[in-house]
View 1 (cartoon, rainbow, N blue to C red):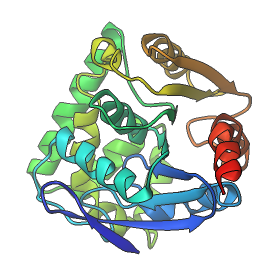
View 2 (tube, rainbow, N blue to C red):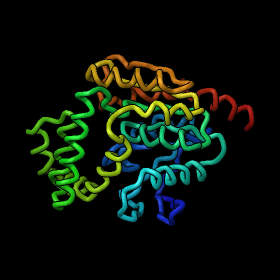
View 3 (cartoon, rainbow, N blue to C red):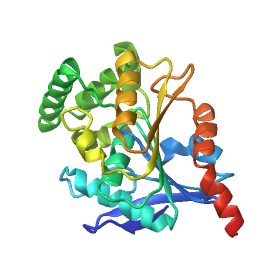
Length: 267
C-alpha cells in the first residue's frame, strides 16, 4: 500500500487499482481497505479505485485522539493523492464522513453514500445517546470485545452469531480496531441529520438504501436526500444494510458515468 501524510502528520495507507477517473471508497465502522476489495474489483474496469485504511486501522497511523476534523483531513489527503476530478462513495458511517468532508469544502462534484446510520426522531436520538454512553464506558474500561459486540448488536447481528465471531480468526483484528468505534460514533453526533451543515454540500449526491432495510433506516436516507441541495434518492430492491457488491457496483457506475465519459474523451 502507498502512504500519504494527513494534515497532522498521521500516515494514511491507501491502495489504487483500475484505470479511469478516480473514485475513493470510504469504509464504515471497523472496516479497512481490504473490506472493500470485492466492490473495488467490480468498479476497477471503469475507474481508478482508491481504498484506504481509515485512521487507527490497518496500516494507517493514529494520534489516539478522536476528532471528526482529523478524519476529514485524512479523506482530503487521500482525495488529493487521487487527483483532479475525484468522486467519492461512502459506506455506512463512511458516508457520514464523506458528507462531513463535502460540507467542509472537499472538492468533489459527485458523491454517493449508502445508508449513513443517522437515527433522527425522539426514539432514535435516545437510542443513540444510550449507545454512545455504553460505548464510552466499555472503551474506558478497556473492554474492546464488549465494544465490538455492542456495535454488532446495533447493526442487527444476533447474539449467537456474535458468539461465533468471537471464536473466529477475525475477532482479534476487530478488537484491535475497537477504539475507532468512538470515531464513527462522533461522526454521527447525536444521531440527527445535520441539515443546516449539509446545506453547504455542493456535490451532486446519490443517497442509497436497501429495500429490505429497516423502515427507520429507509426513512432516514430519504430525509437525508431531501436535506442535500443536490441530493437524490434510490432504493435497491432486495438489499439490506449489508449490500451485495454486485448489486451496488452497477448503480455506482451509472451514477459516476459522466466522469467516465469525460475521462475517455480527454485520454
